[in-house]
Length: 479
Figure: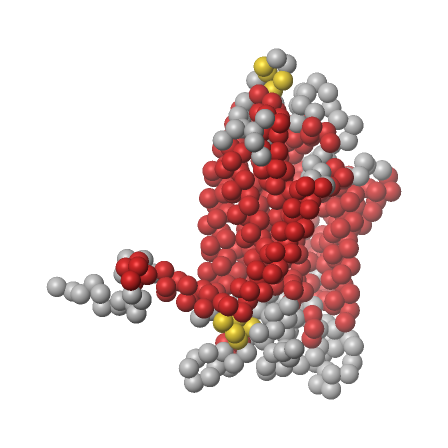
């Protein structure tokens, strides 16, 4: 008979009993005490663990909210039951007000830390080989997070919740052939109503969180398999001592766990300061219209999603008929330039030109709203392909030409401007700026294979517009 204790750990007592039945000590070693991270982490590397903290906050507060929330759009005394249940939580449930405000603040803070986490990936090239799968899982987490936030946004059944959902769901009807049926499937009715509320509640509470948790686990496992990136872009697993320990690595625990604990403490101070003193954040975290019950017969003067959706919403609104014609012209121009200067075979060039002509013809006969929805989706999906769009020979902006960093900051500022324009009422000038910002956003991404490879290596480390050699070891100096 085989001895099931062949691989028994050295743990004794209660821990040994657990280890014989579950690999607890092994998991702690692999992902904490014997997981070696680069020793030159800086403050930008705190936002990954902060997103985990916010996820826990959202799950815990969400459980308590579900205990008292009722996903029912029917009227009792002229007030929707769902809206009344939120008011009941805020006014009658002991501590309910702070639980609800923690959940609403957590939704916004989740996107704050995730956006900063993604910026760090752009800054240090954390999406490049061998971390492509880590980045893809991260983008899928971002998509799941947006779905979770959108569905949760409807649940208070306030004016902005109702009309925001009405606008967004109706956008799907612009998809040719399947659009109307798809919008009907999402709503569960011909208008946003009780069926929609129940569907979104089920997805928000059960389905999407399960997907989100699975993606988070996959993201962490993929990260720990290839190792963490660092500000220098040096692969610390290449240089190891005779025991197989990276020369430029330190154990995640206790060194970075203490570092993270300090960052979490600072973050929680800011988080609870917002919860206690500025939970609405001037109407950005909690819109004032959402304190008014949903009324299908009364449309708000200005309908806009929550701030973390507004950059993409701004791109959606930017696609008008003139903008569609600009896209058509750019597609044809790209095909012509590829035919004139491309290095592919003649037959392939002809196929590209024919494909561009067919695409522009299809665009001409379809309405702009459909292409607005497509642009909004493409703005998110295109991020998945960054590992292959970026042709830079180095990862980190530290060793790239200075104008690469300047271009990245222009991209960030442009994204913030699009976010503001998505909140603001529509104006002629604002629409024009949104269109220019949309073109810059996609230009940055689609032209990345060209501009990211422009430059040569400066071995003397003196030129500002050339790549610089990446050191063999990390450049961190203890202090």
